[in-house]
Length: 268
Image (cartoon, rainbow, N blue to C red; front, side):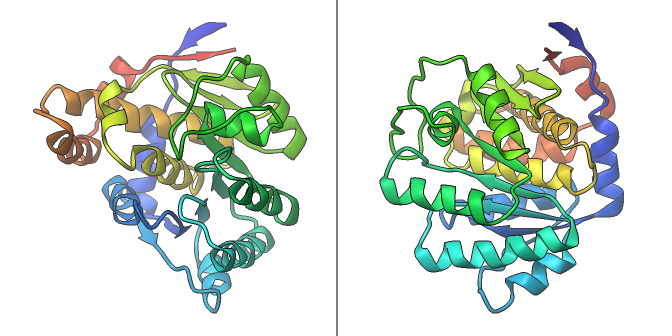
């Protein structure tokens, strides 16, 4: 294990220059915040859910973000249509397994998606990822519960099983693609007091993946920029509501010197 400096800021600059279209079929609770965070990064979000148009919309995009936070049978069917279109085009598909482990229905639909389409990045908290990896865990709604497993090993094994990059968010984020594993140690506990920061992180990862083919590197860079912005926001915030405003502003104004100075990342 060794500490290193990741050139994350050049990817953020690339997003600002290229303004990629990022297609979402996402959580209805957090949809506005997911769209906003993508826009703050400099990219273009589109939140098209109708089965009649998702294939065409995915064909226009440079990445596809799926989030099962507020799933229904019809919604998941639309996700499959969008993902098959994205697979055909060759753009990355990111799946947030939000709430996996909470109900049998939610688990069933996660596994359906993983079986029927190609998912390039699987993202969740520790209990969600452990459940998808076959561990006997439960999730408290959409919040993580304690997991008595080596999550680096779990992430690596899941990555190899699905030939995907796996992202486990938490106090230390794990990004594993079967070859390289990053530990991202930025962020702040204030993020846990704001609904939607996990969903926003998925949208950030999807945005960085739109401009970088090395998906583990893209996810690592996205998390670094997002969580460094969160650390900057905490210094100005009076509470959760103010923090959310400052998070958007700090990410919008993030510069390379700040990213290089504040990042805490290890490669194992």
